Image 1 (cartoon, rainbow, N blue to C red):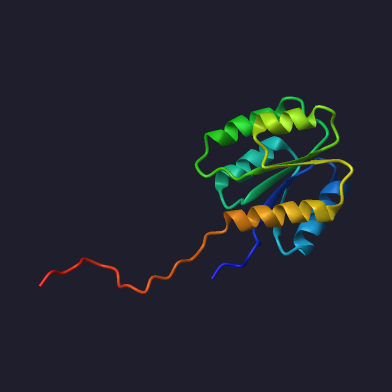
Image 2 (image 1 turned 45 degrees about the vertical axis):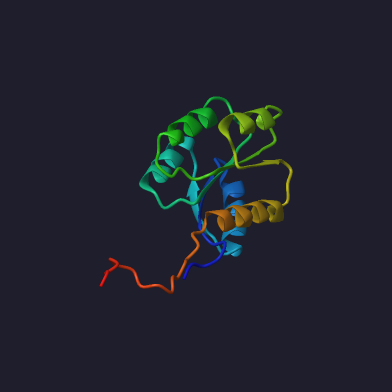
Length: 140
């Protein structure tokens, strides 16, 4: 059985204090927080698999975010992106990278957790139990 709305969230944030605070909020909500300092480090972790959602938490959106999004497009089953930024260009960049969620800074941690919970609910597989036995049909 799968745990509802629980997953591995990759948080990309250069500032250690912000990374710790947001990472703690993610963990307190019951998710696993995987932390990365750079977009390059994030791509390596995403490539290894096991990441359910990527949260890019940055005001510096020059080039790197677009490059990461393009690189992720080549991966099978790339996780959805959540962009959190206070940059004036962030809404446009969010649309260009196809972010599943965009949050403008300042924001409340509860807003991020609600978005992650919603995304995890959409991503979790549904188990189906069939009453009929599987296998070849025999005609008598």
